[in-house]
Length: 263
Image (spheres, rainbow, N blue to C red):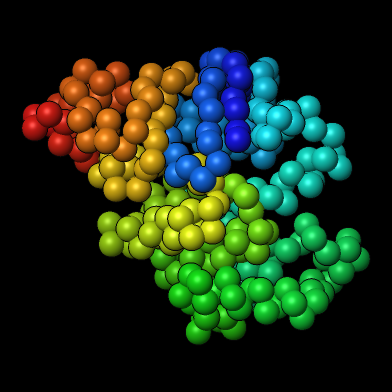
């Protein structure tokens, strides 16, 4: 179980990105975080693996506070947290296979990691991950030869190499068309349901939220303004929608959700 207790993040320029955020994520959930750009979604996800350092509060994972973890404990924790990025975060000039194997860097000796030397069992594991994401035939191509959807599948395969208990997906389909977006979220759903991996995912498009979320958290200006199940969000009222996205979104139809038949 993952617990957030009064999490706060203030950036050096004084921007308050998170304000006393508290909620719980049960093992095996597919929890989606929604909200406008700048609402704190990415900051929240990156505080979990401490790519961003929280200012105050606790993040408890199975009872251990990640915020207080010392370097050795933090490295061990990060091994079990896969991260999928909006812009893929691949080494473009390296092969797909090399990018996927990078997911094992936290498990090999430092000298071996510098030379990118991996045991045969890790190479087999990499091909298994590529097979699960449907791109085995692309293994020896350079990453920048792949389409956006294929590159994101490489990112998922790389995360899978960590044997993660938790996957953080930061706007993983923001740069993809609707068909590819469903494809990518379908792979994440597969990992969630078949392997029992907990998924925390930030998204903009509410039709995707309705399809994939088991539970939803809505952020606005760094605060939680909405909590609900997938069923709740299908019944979202205009007032709830405006609380997250504002009056302007209702008028312009900026978010893709039929809210009460009026949006």
